Image 1: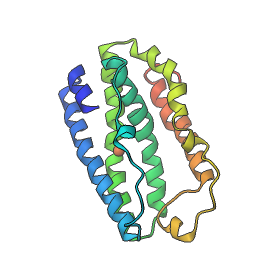
Image 2: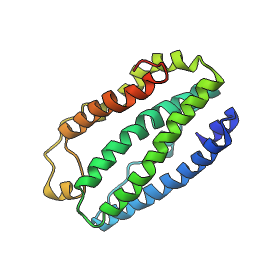
Image 3: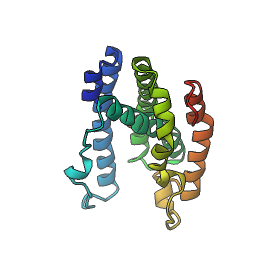
Length: 193
Ligand SMILES: [Fe+2]
């Protein structure tokens, strides 16, 4: 994302923010893993493979960059703010609450980056507006697990102490955030969502 932003010539302040986001996310990953270990999960297998993490480029610079801005930031980071706020409001476990404090403090800046980057892309090419509008339904569908989470057992008290939200709460928060935050932000840019 940062490499694509540099190549596309996004404004320099946005590039510095993107570099900061890389550092933030590395910190979040380390803090989250430390919390997992503190909760007794040191031996939990982590299902990761480099091939699945790799993002193949290939639709052209603006298309690849635009998709990342929309999916990961305008949608992902904008959803993250209310989700982490709600999890932080509930979390009482001392290994978890400080992690959520840090993540929540950073996510608002990540959200702002996404909308500023979208504005920069629209300034480069106004065709980004209809391009975005056409892709939003498919991008929204990639968050189906937030909007309509699959069935899961009820949360335990220990899970609630870590701030976890149950399925109904997850779905309701998605609907509210889309209607009251995401759609209005797109509407202010003449993009129907
Ligand atoms: Fe983030």
